[in-house]
Image 1: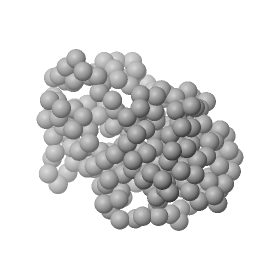
Image 2: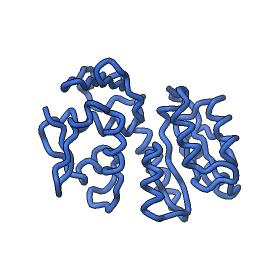
Image 3: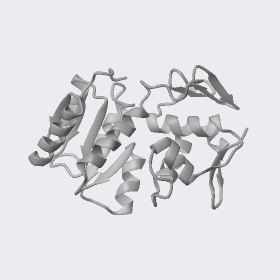
Image 4: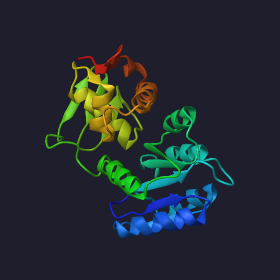
Length: 232
């Protein structure tokens, strides 16, 4: 896991955007590393694991989605939050971004103030921060086991490599087992987004979470027209 004082890694081939984000992140108190292409980003991430990656989708050498996949595949960067920043605003692009492991998705042109708020929101979800005051507990349902304080999850004897957002989504559903959680409620509680936001964020993350849960995937039930529920 990255250290709490690690840098924010900004990856964008546009020098103006790198300078803009670097200046504003430093103003917010963050240490910043900047890369203009995917290979440089991967090298920097391995050498000095960041607490967050702001990743452009369109890079000159490697697609941002591939950089995201590689970061998720490396043990030292597997759980680092990733915010994708791109000029592409098609729904399929957002869905693909979430499927490869992005935690959030912001389109250009963007509001710097909104982006800084999203950065803060993502970092509040990171494992370094306890989720709730009573999080020193082990939650178990069927073959699924969560060590809440350590942000670790097992299905039977196998530990799962969940991102910070995936863990918080699963924790929220398991902690409220037996109760239906609407998409709006999950958007508000897990992503800290407005509950009426029209987005496929929740559905995409639930799909990815089920794939990782394997034999425990059936615990996460779809309640048609409402949202999701973990059965007891």
